[in-house]
Length: 98
Image (cartoon, rainbow, N blue to C red):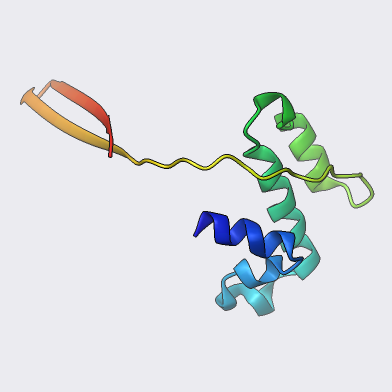
């Protein structure tokens, strides 16, 4: 689904990704702006990601130039968290790739 979402974005059809339940209660240009900034935040190279202050500035401003995102890196696995407890005050957490 993630690759499909990227393809929809690239076809300038980003609004197709929006939940239809909120369609009438939001401004389409603001939704697209948030998607655009969100894509910048998940760039594969951390150096290409905006700082939080830049994100706030981009969200707050209507006349800032927002760079074009490149295809983001997608995780191919899922993390599973297993919680075990041997006593009420102790918890062991094990992370594994699924």
